Amino acid sequence: MRILGLDVGSKTIGVAVSDPLGFTAQGLTTIRRTNKNKDIEEIKKFCDDYDVKTIVVGLPKNMNGTIGPSGEIIMSFGKLIEEELKVEIKFWDERLTTVAAHKAMLEADLSRSKRKKIVDKVASTYILQGYLDMISR
Image (cartoon, rainbow, N blue to C red; front, top):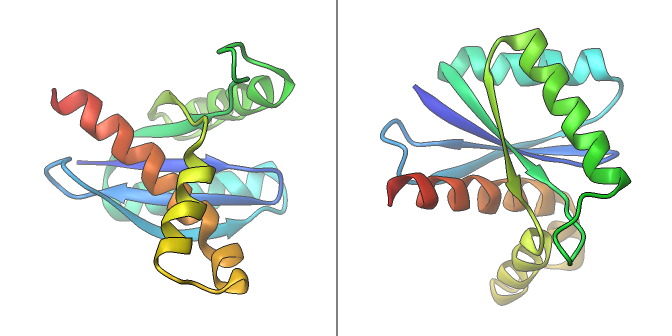
């Protein structure tokens, strides 16, 4: 059983998966969003391929820790995934994960166009890795 990590945005969804033992997260891809049904269909494929029972969804919080309108949208999408796919959904504070992803890619000297293509996948990896580190303690 593996854990899936999602960085859900308005246009794309970054996808990462844990290794079989749950120690490390690997970025898989970025899903281009079309509509909720197709988005869930795409996520279901990963759940089936990797025998996923838990999905960690990045939850955008305000810097003061409160949940704003975008966080509420993500929470309702997470609940929809949970109902449709019958998997456990965990929300993970994603504050600064995109910033960390950009910083890591800058340090790797990736061009702006390459960074733009993979930032959501990298951010989903940070989200999932944070959760894996927390449960391993």
